[in-house]
Structures are given as C-alpha cells and as structure tokens.
Length: 241
Image (cartoon, rainbow, N blue to C red; front, side, top):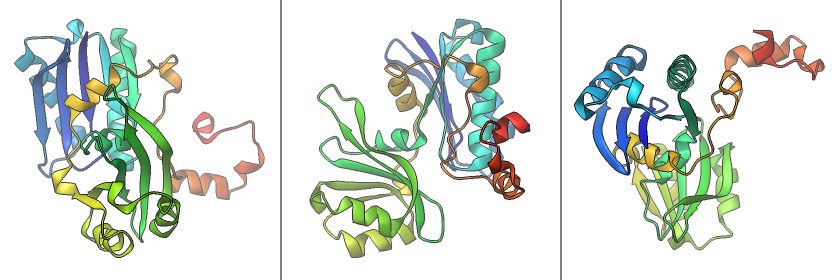
C-alpha cells in the first residue's frame, strides 16, 4: 500500500511517503513559515523524492488534532480535498497518539500538548504485543491538576510524559519525580510513524463530515453558542456555518 501522510497540528511540519512498510521520503520542517504555504510544496517534493505521483497513492493519512487550531485545519482541509477530488481513501489519526509513538514501549505513555494556563491536551496509551498503540484514557482537554489526580492510580516509574514544555516539565517533576519526561524538542511528530499507524486505522467513511478534533471550542464556536444557538440541539455549529 502506498500512503501519503502529513501532520501540521504541531509546530513542526512533517510529510512522509510510505510504501509497503517502508518510508521512501520524509520531509520535516521547523522553519518559521506558515504551514499553509509550505504543506503542498512539501507534499510534492516528497512524492518526487519517492518517485511517485498523487495518482499512485492509495491512502492519505492526516493527524487530525488536537493541536494548533490553524495547523489542524490546514492539514485536514488539504487531506479532505485530495481524498475527495482524487478518490483516495482517508484516515485520520489522533495527533496525541502520533506523539505517543515516540515513547518507550515499556511505559505507560502520556502524550501532551500545552494548552496554556497549566492546562493540556492529553491522553494515555499503552503498546500491545504487536506494537500497536492502544488507548487507555481517551484524548481530552484537562487541567494538569486533574490529569495528575487521574494518573495517581499508576506507578510513577511506569509513566512517560511526551512532548512536555518547560512549564509542564516543572509541574510533572513536582508531582511524579520518578516519571520519565520527554521534552517537546525531543519528541517531534513523525509522519512516517503516522503512516504506520494509519495502516491499522479505520478508513473515514464520510469524507464530507470528517472534521478536526479540537477537544475544546474555538473562539468562533464559543461566540456562536453564547448567542443562544445551544438551545437548538438539532443544529450544529458546522451545519450553520
């Protein structure tokens, strides 16, 4: 199977072309360019490096969030457009699950994305005997205090926190000094791993209704619901706009 995978939900941009279990091309950019400008050229460069065209691709894999609102929207929009117009299969993978793929398989993996004010997007994953990541606690938006309370049921030395910022590292060390902490610069999302996860992920059935996973309201949604739209449970923000 030939897979085109990409992620723009985090600060780095990552693109990979994955064919029959092997990464033929991998492009990663941490430059301060907007992902909206560089994603399509990087996809084209990746395909060229792999000696393929979009016509050769069987499946498109995208990191669907959570993460940067703008970054998630960019990747999902491009993925949907390519899949729909070129009649390709589409798979969406949690951006937190992708970060968990960087962890030690022996640990209970806690991927994080700093959501400011001592809050984070977080999930908990474990690696099974086949090397697949299984969800222990679903991705959610939470305060670090609440996350720590939830994690007290596990042995501290079993925990591995992935993609920690300096502030999150400080909080984690106070609560779980024996835990493993992997900083954000050492746990960059890898589109090659995204493609590998996508191989065993369910294909999106309805591309039109495939949307990013934000895990909290955008400001536009917050304003929309604040106007009283939440009273009509049969109408969603997406349908209205």
